Image 1 (cartoon, rainbow, N blue to C red):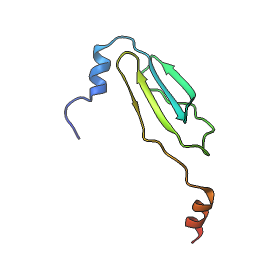
Image 2 (cartoon, rainbow, N blue to C red):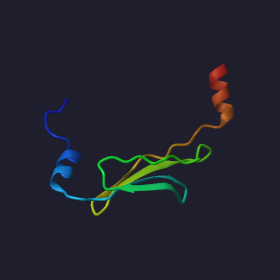
Image 3 (cartoon, helix red, strand yellow):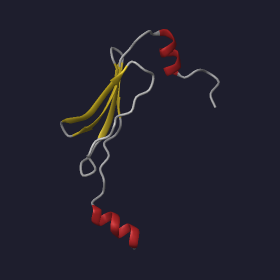
Image 4 (cartoon, rainbow, N blue to C red):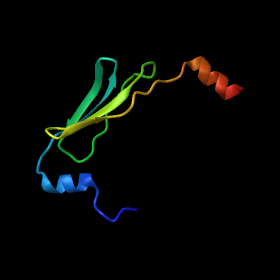
Length: 84
């Protein structure tokens, strides 16, 4: 465990109000964007199981981060793995 404070804790301690946003993204479409001035936020979810998706998060005026794109394997592949 690291003894030093996390970078996020340092940012929160030195900034007043700042909007934090998150969303689920498919090719060219943003689903369920959510924003708050709190310290933690989660998207409500999106009906995107059949699509490749990624999550994005932003702190207004600071930056943006995103996950790698994730794709669900075809259902036939999942069944073959489960029962073979």
